[in-house]
Each structure stands twice: as structure tokens, then as C-alpha cells.
Length: 261
Image (tube, rainbow, N blue to C red):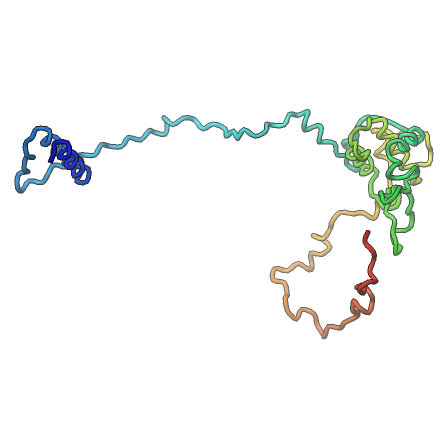
């Protein structure tokens, strides 16, 4: 066996057998002498493993605020750009003033293509005026005059979302003028020259406001709340069928239902 091959074999045995054997075997192979035999009865000395050192908590670097590299904190002026809601009590109204007389021309220019010149709707866009006394009928017409609860919701929505396709482009004065014209179409105000502003607008009341109220189920329905509700045989007596969908014609027959365009 050549010298280099012998060294390779000894090195392989050393790697399999352990670190201490590797030192003795390689040293013997290099010197050409057989490895010394260990004295009988004496176990081989064990190597003392090095102690692991752990850094104390005080030595750890201070925690830093996580940064994900996405976006940034919003600036106050950016937040103010979104904080434009108007409450029923008038809080949040923008500064400005306008009359229905001035608002008519603005409405025709900015709004009539969808809502008609008098709020009657063009095509299938929403109707803004009319519908008084129709809410209890078979075909209620829900408009600003007949249905909406607060004038603030009118100016809030117009300010936020109108004109369609060019939202939030109206100045404060144009906003009040257009809303004054819409209120005039609904007979909410009767004077074309009445000036609406952030000071006078909170006094405007719509006719259907009284029919809107806060959700009071926590009080009015509290008697129905039970920790262990009844799930079977809860009503006394035998149930009676009062009507069927077919007999009252709520399910249209094939070919007789409403057409969907």
C-alpha cells in the first residue's frame, strides 16, 4: 500500500472513530511508528467540552421599531382631506354660501345630464325631487323631499361624490348653491334668494326626519332575550297555515316574470 493511500485510510478511520483517535493515528502515520497502546485498566482520558458562553441580556442590542418598507405615516393634512363628513347637527360643514337662484344654472351645467333639469331623472339615474306622500303607497318614490332624513346627508353626499366623474370639484359656494336649488325643487325652501351657508344650513329640516329613529332593540325587545332560548314546541296550540306563496302569487310562473334588461 502506498504511503498516500495508507494516510487516506487512516484519516477515514479517524473521522469515523472520533477526534482523539484521529490525532494519534495521523501522528503515527507521519512518524512511521505504530500507535502506542493504552495502558490496561485505565480508561482513555475524556476531552472536557468547552463551555458555551451566552451573552447577558444587558449586552443584547436594543429593540428597534419594525419597518416593513411599505408606505408611510399619513400627514395631518392628508387625513384632513378624507375627514369631510357632515353630521346632522352641522358639524363638519365647509365654509361657503349660495342661493337656489344661483344654483339653478350650476345644476343644469353639472347635474342635469343625469338627474334632469328639475330633478326628475334622465334615463334611469336617481330621481331627486317629487314623491311627496308616496311612501305608504304600492310604488313609493324615494327622493330628497319625500324620504331623506337630514339635509346634512344631502350636502355631505354632494360634496363627497358629485358631480359624477368629477367628485369633490365643487367650491364651497357652488356646493351650497346647488344643494339650495335641490331643496327648492322639493319645496323644502320656497325663496330662491334665501342664502344657505355653514351658519344657516343646520336649521334646514326635511319632512321625513321624524320617521327615522335610533335602533332601540336593546330596550324594546329585551323581554324576548333569554339565556336559554326555546328551540322546540315554543308556541301554544297547533300552528295554522294562513297563506301559501302560490295562492298569493308571489312566485312568478315561467315566462310570466318581470323582464330583466
